[in-house]
Length: 296
Length: 275
Image (cartoon, rainbow over the protein chains, first blue to last red):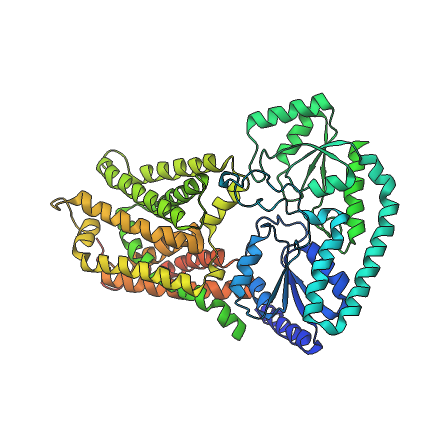
């Protein structure tokens, strides 16, 4: 029990600490947004993150500390496009009137926006397009634009500091992408089976062809006939890789692999999933390398 | 500490409202031996909103709510009718079948809707921590209406569940009214805190009270006491351990029960007549 009291006391002290430091208190729904906020906000920002880098971002169980974090926060960053709808619940639940909510999809041009009239039979989750937009470096510019815009509104005095951080980050990223080119070349044009439709942005970056999904529709478990079709497809097209997110059950991908000779690899949809503290570039390289290895 | 109080204020009030009506229904449910009726009706109600969703209505809209209510009433009608099979098969068997089939039907209905499974999961999990004042007031109003209805007609409802009701007239109508009002209650409570917590609110305090006393009014009072104390402890545990409140509440409800049985179970207390 004394451990718990100590823990609570630490929370109180830490929150006092940040209040005294005069820093902006930010809560980010995902590890990716926390990464971007940290890169731009630097030491002017105290950042809390809700979902872990290996959480399924479609569904996060609400804990009391999440709401307490938002109660004390000045600004909240969410992915938007109806991916992290639990964040909206948390924001409502925090009843924090002075909280600035930033939808980081603001300047994104989403892929896969339904062209037909968004019939409710297709659910409402993807009516604004695919929400996994941070998976291509091409979207780092619009994401950080939304972040910096909100930060300078809240803290205009430090505008040049934020702008400079962003400039440095974007140029480093650009240089890093050049060094990544040889590995990207190994995966370009190759066909891959994905578990869930999280990867269209990553596929567009790597030039990968997404040949099919284990889920017939996002969030729907495969039927036997769908799996039979996939087995057929993998065999006839000699597809070498089945890519899955870390939080899915391996049994179905493993069975497909055993039936076809393809290889199951885990791709991480969030920064920090493969290794704690990795940079955007390291995370991207990790996914590219894992795929290149399987496609050899 | 202030932040914790504001955080837990509305969730705790929601618990009070829920405990108030569920403990009462729990007395009936225990006595009738239809323990899993709430899971079954909740699933049928969820099937109703799922179907509305399938037909193109918003999952949280009024149409979906009407659908879920209508389905819950339909479920109530089924249970009313099948009570006549009671001497051939236990009512729990029918309740179980309705649960399994309506769950499976909901899975079929969403199997071609992207992220459909997520939507249905939300329906049955609830989210106690983000309960707003508006929801608490609305729910309290609905439950008060149900409560008054049962209070004014308590003679009929109590005779139906607790006494020898062989000579009772219009049994079927009263049975249906029981299941219908119960369906209304479960439809809104599951949306607030999920099936697991609703089950705990319904069954555990009533079991505790039934161990202690035979007197119905005393059972109600003891059940409420148990429910209120355990809800408060559960919410407190949820904050201290930083775990989901629903699961914490269910654990506290369950774990306090053996304690109570050890303390009181082997004694004759509160006028319990032992046979």
